[in-house]
Amino acid sequence: MSDSRIDGYARGLFEIARAEGTIDEVEDELFRFGRAFESNDALRNALTDELIPADRRQGIVESLLGGKATTTTTQLVSMVVGAGRGRDLPAIVAKLVDRASASKSLESAEVRSAVPLTGDQQDRLKAALTNATGKQLNLKVVVDPSILGGIVATVGDTVIDGSVRTRVDQLKSRL
Image 1 (cartoon, rainbow, N blue to C red):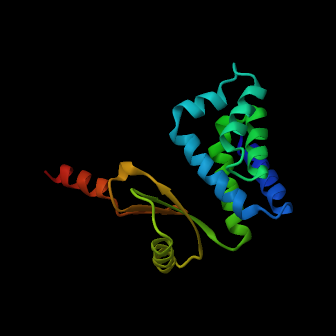
Image 2 (image 1 turned 135 degrees about the vertical axis):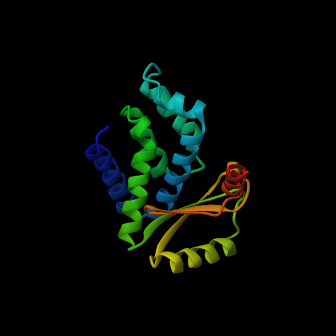
């Protein structure tokens, strides 16, 4: 899909969530759903398969999110999937998160960690990243066991890689 369509969907979803006063919850839920969508082949295939009728794909979304996410989030994801734009969900969600962050004068920061971070760890990490980048941040944490340990932080075009996996790979290349 073209960038203008992705921007249009993200802008529309953002405006709906903002009008309903649920932008923070919807942004967080969409971010988490987008990450689950990217990492789960079966889910991605079910929601993007054009041979599956739209109402059935929407039913999958509603059974997954119903009761676990706000009604707004469930309806927004269902609308995108029903319109046949499931493949673009990660890009739409990324644009929405950026738009929501910008509306709060923040920049999006995605942090991948091998284990869940406590609230205190997230606060300290956010302060350290703010100090390192000089930007106020909207921190999004993703648990990614493949990094083995440490974290990988992405703020805009800047990547700070403190993962054990990268260190092991560097040691391998030296040997």
